[in-house]
Length: 420
Image (cartoon, rainbow, N blue to C red):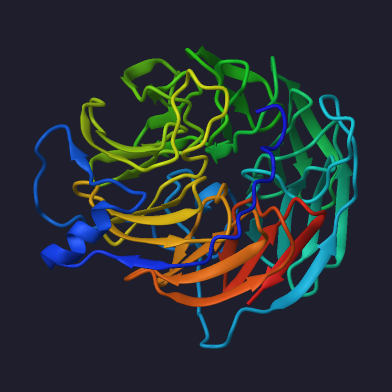
């Protein structure tokens, strides 16, 4: 992804759609922009029960941990959403864009560690802010836009960059520890496990670096570039590519365990839960595969998705979230979807005001959604009803982080926000 997608806001009004057991309402849902899930193979009808890792004290990386299954903490209040503070980032042009950029681009989820917020800026900086008031603790100038989400372990912060580099900074003061050049841009978000850094590159390789000095441990070629994050579970790495493939790699040496065909550009970070791998793609299809061998399980297509042969790509740029037996993700058609994790059937859908590019964390029963019209929505995970909404600016392409009932998110208007 060489530049942010264009701003395509919509004035469509919000509406609430919910599936029920009645035949009439099921027929009504069939006419909405989401189609029924399509089973590829029979699956057990037993309800899925997630086994997420125990909630950590911090939120140090994309989706909370390398397994990408921690989405944040409350508590929530009954009060309407409001801005606690905002912070203006610096603007900067880049190698591939002469016009200046600022704020947070896609996917851009911040890390929250202790009383600090860490995030990369489209204006070619990495920031550490005070979580209480948004004051700057330090900032570091990078070679180009930093749209990747940082990973923080101890005093090390690792983040990708559009200047074909992966940076490791001192999380305490922002000084450079090492920088490694890859063959092309790095939008993907790193994972750090046992002093190793795992990250996919847009040069068509999956990398493992030594956290201490950036030395390459392995460099696995893939058939296509990686823009989304990777998920690491029980010694296996799951990652999608723009060439339309889903890979399962051996964490130890990067060798391919299995490869499944998605069939379209997939920017999603795969979600792994209860023996299944869930992903989405720009063709507007959500897919589930068996975790052990990549066998297709079900598909669910929504309107607005286009295949790889078209110039304009819609569908999904967000990543699926699995919560209480359901899959949550927003689409470029402006709908926030809740699907059954068992068979892909739609449970409910909510129409926002514009396209949804960022992922939508589900925390203690609330779905936090941002759209390109600059609105943040809090929806009920149970039925999709609107709990609260607020407009903070424009172009919320990034993914919010939620900790202690506060929402931290950047926008492509040059600002970073804290809401509660």
